[in-house]
Image (cartoon, rainbow, N blue to C red; front, side, top):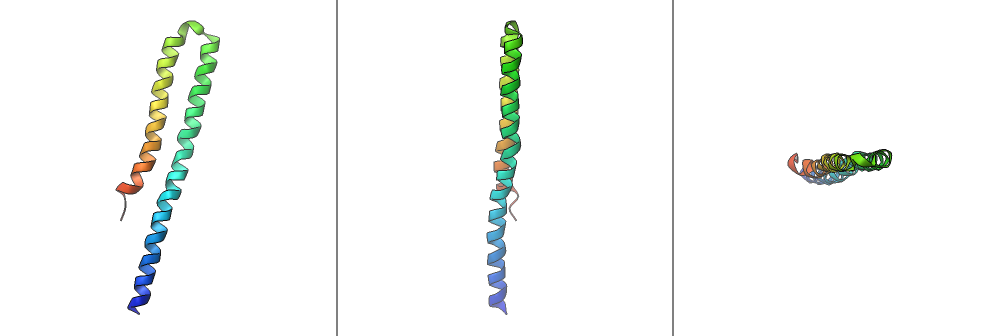
Length: 83
C-alpha cells in the first residue's frame, strides 16, 4: 500500500512541474501580443506625426518595458508558488 502512495506522490510532483511550464507558456502569449501592439501603433503614430517622434518613442519604450515585466513575472511566479 505504501509503495502505491509513493508512486502516486511521484506522479503528482511530475505533473506539477509540467503545469509550471504550461503556465509560463500561456503567460508569454499576452506580453507577446502587447509588445506587437505597442510597436505597431507607435510606428503608425510616428508616420502620422513625425514631429512628435521623441515623445512617442519614449512612451513606446515605456510600454515595451511594462509588457516585458509581465513576461518576467510569468517566469518567476511558478518558482515562488511551489508547494
